[in-house]
Length: 356
Image (cartoon, rainbow, N blue to C red; front, side, top):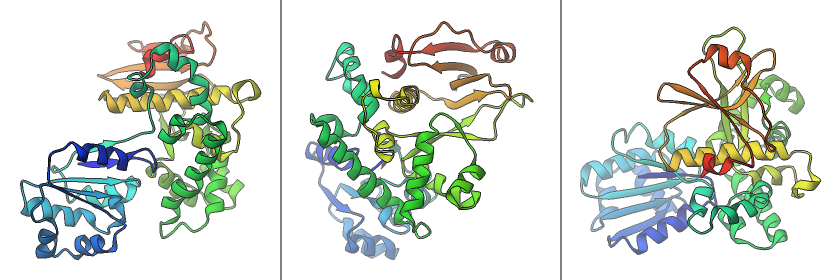
């Protein structure tokens, strides 16, 4: 089992809680441990089997720190068919690349997100969660943030998550040396939330070429900082499909990047926060409830658009995400070209079923 997810969302806590009640004889190590790296990077059958001998379960936290960890784990599961293995990683790009091919057909993959409304329903009723909505829009859903009752502490923790944890993964990559450019890129995207992104335009603003922008965006996506939403295309000439929209995995991280923790009555970006919040909560619901969907936005050259489109079971479902409910009809081109599709406005009046 491979568990991905951002830093500080509780992967290690989840593991320890599971292990305490598993009843299995286990060994848990960190991929940051040089001795563990040496064992799995060696490719030495005898050394790897000696490491695991006598255990029913091997757990490696931060497994992406081990080069070619997939090959080492393949040796383990091939030579010890009854052993169970759990590997976690906060950088899917590394872990997926290293584990994916060697363990094809041998693994289950899970993604752990910041705390979702779906999970919080077990602690609070719908009314209580709606009362806490402003806090989720401003401070997000990281476990430490949700459990802290002090606003100053929430701000401090979010600053630490952005500076010490998220950027740490990114800057450890061989070709990423400049934290200022990464932060400047994130700030630009934070202000453009919900808009289509031009790589060339961002490159001009940052003084780097568009290929470098594309590489940085790919890294930010694979380290669970950003979510890339692409345009829906059915080859209609009027549809805009070349550009992507980028959303932050967590509202609190987005606000920390621009250092704005004002409450909603003092903000001019409530619509953007609402859109980001609903999209990421919907993705969590899709993941946890196994709702299999291709996700898009939809836009035409003349400005008709739908914020969120799901393709499920051969049918399209369009959702317009509005902070305040409006009696709005579907765009004409949408109903004309996708006659069997659905359309719904998601607002404060009806959002809870959409995300929880």
